[in-house]
Image (cartoon, rainbow, N blue to C red; front, side):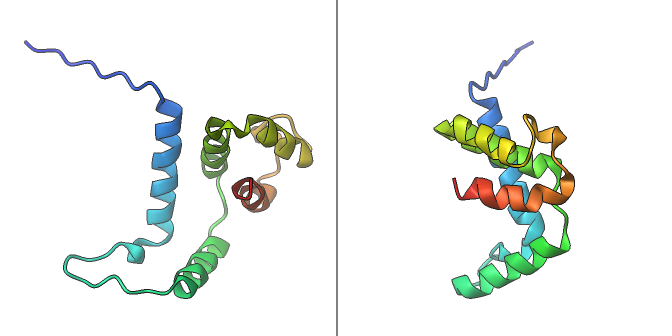
Amino acid sequence: MISVTITIDQAAKLIAALNRLAEVLENNPSSMPRHNEPTTSTSEDTSATETEQNEDKPVTLEQVRAVLAAKSQAGKKAEVGQLLQKYGATKLTAIDPAKFANLIKDAESL
């Protein structure tokens, strides 16, 4: 019997990237090119579509956590802490879910 063990040194970073990819694919499945289909779209079309779809769905705790984790891994841990304080909390779970969309916008601008 052969046993294989895989160790991922940066699991948190990988999870954050996979969550972000899943979010993008979930929010805009039509953005994936079809086989042999030309990929022609303008950034204005894409931005409008993403904005419309993001307004329809509430932002989840997991989505916010993924964005903040990615920023922390990118060396912005202090800024993430300040952002949480801006929203009146020391931890993400203490923030009102109604504020998650604004929190993500602020985090992405870091």
